[in-house]
Image (cartoon, rainbow, N blue to C red):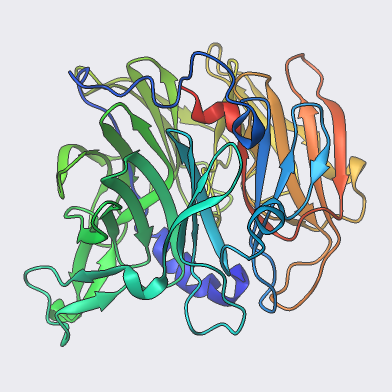
Length: 416
């Protein structure tokens, strides 16, 4: 359960990072997640995946919202007859496959199939599993760790996929590249720093909202060891290919793709701070084309997913509260408290993960609960708002169909 690892996560948030794309790659894999026709099933662009972390005594699960709004619980278990893992962290879709990432280590009594499960995106039938003990890596040069081969440190964080040989996963130590064809793990330079005179490996990477464009992945970094920065990573490479360093802001809130050749990195101060910035970066020229100071808190708190989410001309954020605000990236007008969740769910007390927008429909997804504890089964709601007009409209209130969502994934967002 997230609260069980809150202290670790908060420390990790000091060193968050996010990377971006390069000049147009010659082998840009534009078609893998852009099919010419609807593949159907769970891969339908109109569907939505909700990744439930669950509580300490239960395995994690996936709730699915179909394109017609029907809600189906425990879809992985129904298809496979097993659970995928415990303490889920993130999921991603690439080339007709779902990549489901969870801690799933031996400290829990309720283990699932593995820490990284690859399933067919249409049917959700599992195809390949990497258990926690499979995800070992050789210690980097300069490390004073006693063992040559090390295990990942939980809690895990995020997963994105460039291709089957370049699956980028992250934990509280660093970011890693997994080749799923061989099972080989590589620690990625520029995502970690040695602490304690080389006795510890400490992450300087914030992979929340990490964005893939073609053969490149983008995310931000910084914290205690490094200045706030934007990083680019390439397939088959275990170091950053390009960096933008010395950016303003203490932490990384998130990252969004704002154009074919442009991404936006959001940086922030501590909770409640107005030390918040948006950097718009041309990924061909690898230069900042615009920087805006934001007069409201856009922090991502301790959640795994991006603290900002883009739909239409608006950037939405909650900063860990039950009030959702938005800012226009055209005229920079701020609609503070654009949505007051308490009006629709008076019993809600906690935001479960950062809000997520479907860039195609301009629907906004919000997960809340009345309790937030590692051994507490809590009443939970997922609210769906149509934000395509000046006034938000609640179109769906899904009650008691989830268990502490750690991420919400409109499938259409994977089709870029």
